[in-house]
Image (tube, rainbow, N blue to C red; front, side, top):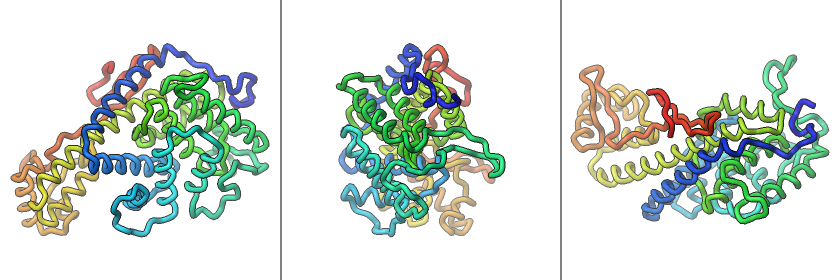
Length: 393
């Protein structure tokens, strides 16, 4: 019996609950901090942050699977679904489908899970795909559903899911478990524990012909939102993308047994780090809105274009800083014009300057907020690891 679903204790997962206690508490405290920050925003700022967060998750959850979506198109589609003004650009089917799924997840997080929800998400997700047989339904192929890598003549099998003939019954059991373990139901589980099991459990069944990873991560987000009582906007996929190699390694290890403490500890660290990323994004976007509001009408087109390009990099800032050469590349300005524009941006308080001559660099005047890696160690301590070493959070 090579896989966890073949073992007699499937799907009765076990784990060390004490190892997750500190992480669960830390996550709830962080959720309060994040919700408090968002509540201080006005309606327009809140809409902007919601769209930014949803689009980031949409783009990064696709990128984990190797699919590159156009971010501007995703944002345009999200804005349209929220009834907000858009640039009316043409949006491709992949971007539109992903945006629709993420907005539905945001709006209907509290609705009990059902097969109909999963099928609707699947239809959205694979919109425009022509090579799938099973769209909006569970897989039916008689061929084994395997996750493989390596050469075609000598593939490495990382996981093999239950045969298609078992999927419907497995999913009925999964959906029933999901709905009874939410808050206020028969067997409620803590937020991180439940979301971690949700993702692993779904991936082990692998019920769809394609899109299992993206929908599995959406289900983890739905679970977290239900536990908190409102949409999380947590940068879960963005954080997993940054740890993609270890994500696949720990998932592969977890699909061989039903004692899942290691997986849940890994997932808890990622979820807390994702929450920190979201909080940093909210604070950054607040500063961004204030900066642009203060500078409104004071910048020429070149300066505005360069500033918006830097702001697009988010809370961690423009890699390596901006110099006159990069400014010229972004704006098409001559060297003399680039230097003059940059001096003006510093004078107006949009940028700060460090270094001299060829070592001169410019950064945004608003605080940058790099997020350190978070892990839950074997003693259950939530530990942040940054460039300066590690410390207990």
